[in-house]
Image 1 (cartoon, rainbow over the protein chains, first blue to last red):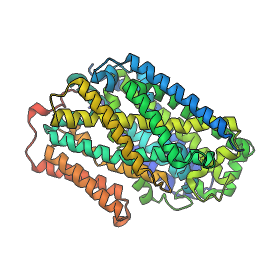
Image 2: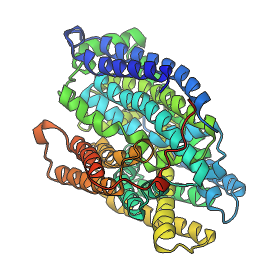
Image 3: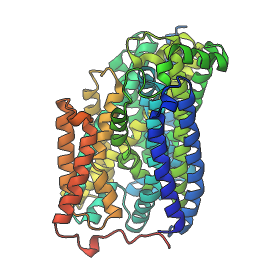
Image 4: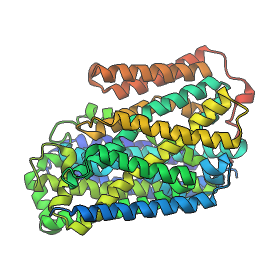
Length: 64
Length: 489
């Protein structure tokens, strides 16, 4: 496993934990606004952008 | 704003004409009596067509009808969150880490279905047969969901002029004709058109909902004051507690890999097509879920007392959207349903023909005979789904969750086939059969052990058995390893 794979998997694990459980904290549950939704939307966009870079790197290593 | 029945019929006719014309062009482009050409497009689908057919196939009528209904009933935060987790997060990971391996194995060995890959990987025809039969069994509820979505919409929009069963029959015939004629090219090319319509329509409906609430700031104020519980966890109906949220997510996380019609896309394209599908699918799902969740929660403010949550989209279309736009929106729902129905029909039929008929029962079948058997099975499949769809269920997303949970019991077998060489045929068979049996038993008895949904237990049991039985049985021979198609470095 290359360094880029390791970084990406660590990033993915942290992202998943934050995405799944942070909305259950008081900061979000006590705010009846679009805060939670906007937070999830922003995290989703961040993941897509990082994944696009990673997928490009990964493809270069796949044998034809 | 009632829709004129004549306009609805005219729209249906035009839509069918376009789809069937694409089917005709696809028929011309498909080599005669060539299974690879008919089922996996000679493995030459372009990256863009591959990502569109994968995405349009994955997203079905449940999005505009059931998913919108779920947002209406259970809130925007959890409903958006679980979909993005399943598609953007696990979808991307599964496509990049498993999709490439499936693609690589298919390039080397000529597979047309994932069950063929399982047969070689585990050195067992029974693994392929069981995976195919369970795949068919668990996809039936998913197909039912498509037909019910379309039929409910048509019934609602036309005030019963096109009745529920009539809607099902109509679209079964539409998808059947172009799929039988043009094979996977017809499916994929219509998916490009249908996928584009799906995204455009979702944003179009969103625009009218925001407009009806007095613009963007009016929309935000109205939702925050009139539906505040819809904006946070655990949602107005308390569905998205931590356990409730994970109970929905866990059965869905393997769906981007385990749906047979989804993973067959890995066999149809080139190397670049897998990469485009991985991140293109993430972008597509984000662009599709975003407008639907926003307009559905706006619908909660506009129509707070609907008796059936699934009727929120039809209600919006008939109440605040101009008739011409409602007609276009209708095509978006048909498109979402048809793009899934056609793929399911072709994929499951090709699996039945290849994995049960050719690889097990009748090895000497000719290519012509195999294509004929695929077409015959399509007829049988449509009739089975029609029969089970005759009685509608209140929440069509319920069918989707059952189907997702069912195919997820195949996850360890599929993942292990290319990622874990110690997995054995006994492990795979026990995992698939017992995992499915446990899920079905818990589902039919409506049992939530320790508060967790049946789908979670189905996945847990299938993984535990896969690892446990595999480690307790003799390793598979070296010759069956298809892990050797590895990445550089």
